[in-house]
Amino acid sequence: MATRGAKVKPEDVTDVNTWVYNYKKGRVNVVLGENGEFLVLDPTLMRQSKADALAAPAKIIPHERGYDAYALVDSANAELRASALAKLDSVRNAIYAQAEEASTEFQDIESDYLAAVDAWNAAPTGANANTVGTLQRRLAAADTKFRHALYPHRYIETHDDIQRRTIDYASKDDRKLKHILFQTIYESSVPSERIVTVVDKA
Image (cartoon, rainbow, N blue to C red; front, top):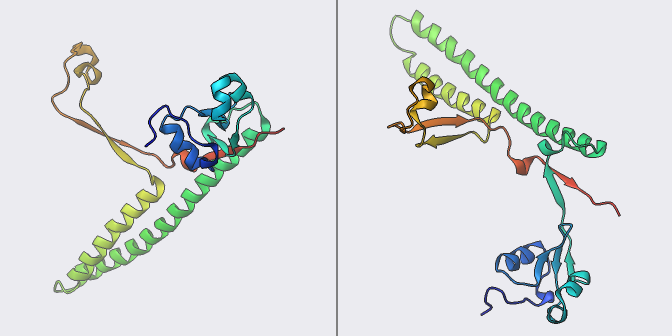
């Protein structure tokens, strides 16, 4: 069984997944190059000189590099800036399309619900009560779907270390609040959805 710090045979590293696996295992001949290349060094050459092994790696595993579009919108490179803006537009348009579809569904159910409520109020008996209840549940589900479409990555953070002076600065009280605070974070996208692939030019 190979131990951490051991070397791996270059022929056993065939793609990004096997490179990452061996890199995490601490194989000393699986390294990042100065420019972010995924290198596999020759074990024999390493014994002579690591500098020589780095200069002539046994393998360079091809991979794409990318950046979060938000990090590129102010880039001095016009091409990267345009790619970043196009990516953000694409992400936003996808969100808007889903939200519009969910909104239309909500409005349709809401219209049926209001009509059912009017019919229920006008009837001498509660004959339409079941219809109203059913539509009310559907309306609540449609509202949840619409909110999720707008912010598909919304999550809740918990804070249990908030000082009292954060809430009331004039108190100058450094003691922590007795209760946990919950904060909703509205995220419409995550970095993996905003990646702009960067191609190195020779």
